[in-house]
Length: 236
Ligand code: IPE
Ligand code: IPE
Ligand code: MG
Image (cartoon, rainbow, N blue to C red):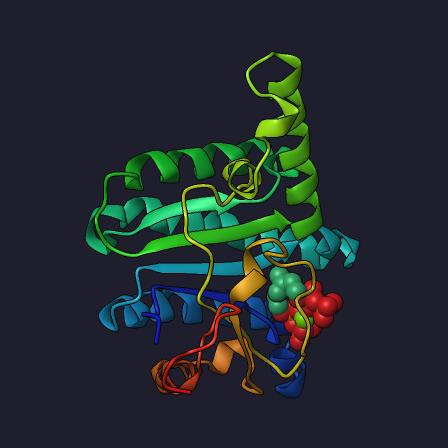
């Protein structure tokens, strides 16, 4: 059994959670942000070293303007809180995704948080914002092409590791477990390259309702899985 070092979560179901309660979708996102804070603490307590969360996809810009701006505003508030509490939380926070489309204010906050948290020693939290797996792979190809044009790399030297090293996730291991809340069974363009040998778990619970008990159930389920990575186990 491989140790559960990295959980990646597709935070889904905020809108449905709110609708069920007669609230605007925004209320679901606000509640979802609170859940994220709790789950970061809970995951670290359980020995998880990396937590990656899918918070906004490259396709989510297609949502109504008021929802997109509410999510961006909430992201700003969340970043402010993380900057303020960086010492106490002890998390190393990174953002993956294309930051170009973010406002200058958000870009600055992301950079500030990455700077103030980089020497922390606790949970590695990676937030995927304006993230798309295909866009990430495309970007990696462009980076590699630039290195080839500059003479820093030869075509024959392109390996799987070279592709990985040019992804946004270059500093973090591939996820052991990819978990999606709220019942949908798809990746929706999340970590396409990195998911090659991840275990998948889909739970019905909406993200705002996800709690320590749900996390324990997910870890228990992961521990039952038999990860073979294409090999045959002697004892099977
Ligand atoms: C996840 O919740 C958060 C984002 C994608 C930004 P949703 O907003 O997708 O919630 P549902 O799936 O509509 O319930
Ligand atoms: C995936 O959720 C993206 C995030 C959770 C950020 P969506 O709700 O956008 O995905 P679909 O539309 O159900 O595939
Ligand atoms: Mg959704």
